[in-house]
Length: 198
Image (cartoon, helix red, strand yellow):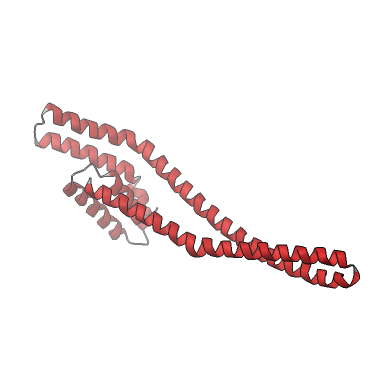
């Protein structure tokens, strides 16, 4: 885990804190990791521990501090307790869920790359095979015309499949992937705007 990932996870888990407290905590940990430097970044992150656990501790400390600063009404005490309970129980679910989502995303990317590679390979193999069948067919036409015709027919079929595969891969790589990337970025920007409104 690098500094950016650590801070991102920490910030995601601190969303229940008031803005001023959240910014103060984020500033402290950013400065701490910057002071450690790039050479000692991993040791500093290891020394700090799990950012989700740090966020739970900060949230619990904030609730205790708020309870000491002002006397709370029963409803406010219940809300503070509820925040601590949700923070404690949500992290064991949220962390594995985030890992599972990342794994599914990685698997989807690897699968897409494998499909594109295999489609391009099919197109190249079909075109090469059609060339070989064409040469064999032309040579066989003079010796055994029926066999030569079969080979020439196979060469035409393979040429058609190879061209079709090539065009399909061009459409997928040239048009489909940018469209998928735009769709994903639109979804992410809508999610960010929705979170900003909340």
